[in-house]
Image (cartoon, rainbow, N blue to C red):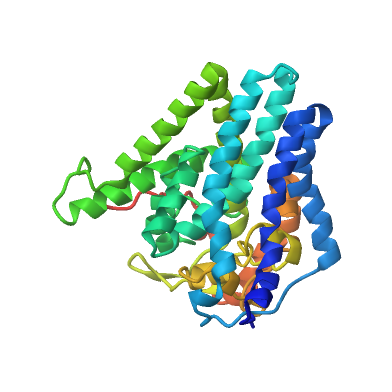
Amino acid sequence: MIATGTLSRWQSASPFWVSLLLIPLVWFSAATGGWSVLLVPAATWWAFAVLDRITGLNTQNADPETPDTALQWYILLTKLWAPIQFVTLFGLIWYATHNTHLSTLEKIGLFFGMGVISGTIGINYSHELMHQKSRLERWLGDILLAMVLYSHFRSEHLLVHHRHVGTPRDPVTARYNEGFHRFYPRVLWQCWVSAFSAERNKLARIDRPWTDRSNPFWRYWALQGGMLALAGLIGGWSGVALFLLQAGVAIWQLELVNYVEHYGLTRKHLGEGRYEHVLPRHSWNASQKASNWLLINLQRHSDHHYKPNRRFPLLQHHASDAAPQLPYGYPVMTVFAMIPPLWRRVMNPRVRAWRRHYYPEITDWHPYNKSLNPMPKA
């Protein structure tokens, strides 16, 4: 259970604040240059993979009925990240374009690391914020997504992914045997199209055109344009290039995780375009303790899709009888995803075992392996 006293509440939440350590680390990289520009990727990928091995799994569950009043330290963390990332990103753009001790290659390495931060932490925190009812939290989520030029992720995630996960109408559900390098270019385009179509169709249902000012894409474009303009004002064309570099890395990080989360998992087709309800079995689960500190329990993805509005400290661990388990946390699994033969060797047997366990009555899986068509019907 989550403790009730202020001190004990902080002690319970404090491991999740580990992400803040990446901020002085990236500034140390900027100040010293050289091989230190690799510290952020090394910390998020390799150090946390080692920590997962040391700390093991966390299978304990908080009371899912815990009120927000007992979660202040968790909520504060996600609210603080947007201004912290904003100052860090644009501060680094100014620093890198106004100092001469960093070579071009070192600047690329530095902003690759910044992209790892804005993707691994920033987009992940925006994901938590976009699911909340608070207007402030949703705006903070939009600001974080604008910093990586991926604002449409909010519409795609809330209106398409959660509704159609594990079906042919969800572009983010990676097909069985689909390698990441095929998945990535497909999903970049299809996610944008499906997000825009979902918002357009939502307006059409109340007889409004897509150009209506209530379409959030206007807000997305304004925020993204403002971020690009600020990068240019601070660092000129070099500042824009560095901004684009970190945004590209962040998007790549996001889609690597998206690829891992639902690979090969499909909901049973009930006929006439209907599918079974989303259950914990339709997302890969990982309860590695250290990487869940870094990723604010994102790896408890089975419960997130089962109860999408549940705040991250309350997400439940589901055992292997209820949800399929990844063999490692995301730091390791995303590296595997970049090497398709290794990925298939690790994951394809698990997908086949998942099919036998949950759907022994389905003998022909070929219809479930066909190309996805993510475009929702008008």
